[in-house]
Image 1: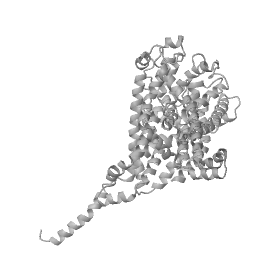
Image 2 (image 1 turned 120 degrees about the vertical axis):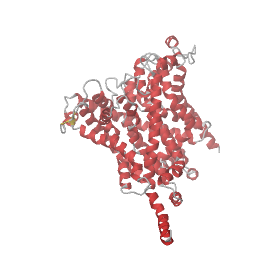
Image 3 (image 1 turned 90 degrees about the vertical axis):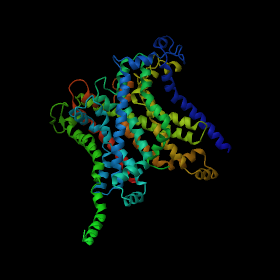
Image 4 (image 1 turned 45 degrees about the vertical axis):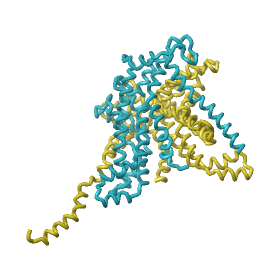
Length: 278
Length: 310
């Protein structure tokens, strides 16, 4: 008993020190966003603002001349929500067929898809731009929404989960006269809600945080999502600490809020996707 | 009407056919997998194959690609007078350095954190949530925050350490900054995986070892590590893959500097294909294929992993 008491204290002190490192950048950003740039220039290192101001937020969000953060924010919201919905529909349909329907070539196609997960995405970057350009999607939301739904991993994840549902369920529903699509919609979909929640959260955050691809397909400042937008913002406010940090903070608010409410799913999802059971 | 027998038979057969007629309404399985397969082909499979082809061509992204055989590879791998040769050497070298510096840190730090959390101290939930949180932030937001933290004149790091280190523009500080940021930003997932793994180790093993007189060092290396071997291997693989794709951190934090010492290959690929001036997509594609081959070696291990589970 005594021994576990000591190890608990050691662990606590260690974690407290690490927590300091992890929390300081976030606190620094949040607090600085309420300092005026003039205060920072004269008294850079007061921990709390001398005067609390919200001017940085007004400037960053609504100064539309060069870094329209509010517009970027809305662009990101539209893109991320649309991609999430698209992925959920496509993935659940495909995973259903791969796990519960019998058809010619099913396993061969699935193994092939799995094997392509080895293909590094960096190789398709340049031609993908060309395709998107030919479709007329440069500077169009679709460029950031659709290609991201082509991935295989989510299908694998949902299929794994579906395999845990006994086939007897489908059989008895079929005896009662349900069609495949009814079984999918009324029986399977409600049962796979947990894994779909995970897919939705990961798709949304990945889409929100995507950087390289959108910075290639958007060069119109008005159309851009916020993650590549911040690179422009950094250039603009290179010497303006308060405004730059306010922009960064605005960009992380949505995923942060999402995280606050759905923490449990993020944690559980990792044991789902890492697959190696503890 | 009169011949009820025939009618009966007709009704019966209709009743039997009820099911088959319903079956003809059933959507073909290919309609379920079709939407994904179409997107997969257009936006993944085809561009990947085309990307390999492009690496054997001269292309400006606009006209028709002109086939040049191995000329691009010859240029970037062997032509020592070429700037692209220098780019590949520098870029791939720095990418490998980045992998080498960050992967061990991104395994050891979360492992220590997980071990700490596994002792179930006060505030467990808070600590866990805090260390995981940065994973949810975008690379550009995190790089803005750290470029201000590391700033020479108005950065709090220099102020509170009472130094005037130019973190982002002198070596070895640029690498230290990049590794620090990457650890801060990305260790959340690995930590949770280790935590789950450590939770799964039976307490009896430790008790038995204690009775046999094993110290905590021995217990860690003889019991803990072997028990979570699979998770360590898995995280090494996924971490390595993601670090090979490094782009945003050096781009926004060190601008690839000082003097290209942190310019990674993906930055050169982006610059050659999409930078200002005429696109040199063929060279960019050849560089991408080389980077891709490095990643593929690691991904192959991941594939074997997932297949084992299937």
